[in-house]
Length: 92
Image (cartoon, rainbow, N blue to C red; front, side, top):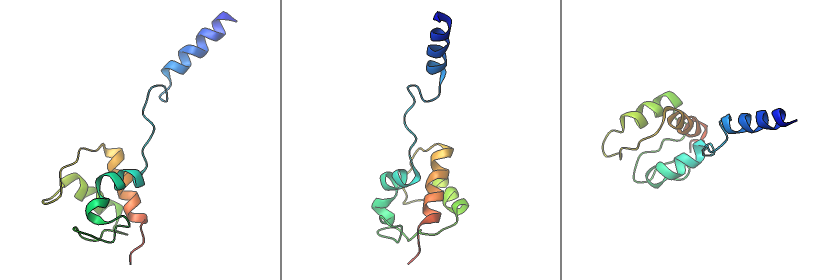
């Protein structure tokens, strides 16, 4: 019984969920990093409309951060999540 308990504790500590931050959705990342300029619905604001753009195109722009876009440090997974979310937004 003691070995089983130790094995369960070791498995839990080694689990990726243990102490790891919860995953962030593309919508949350977009809201935090993009919506203030591109609009909550991606239909533009002080920056161009991006709703419905191809995820690959969005990822390239986010990675390159051309001026006047602010440079943001995102992981490849977070960039892909934002790109998928933008691609899912409906155009006007």
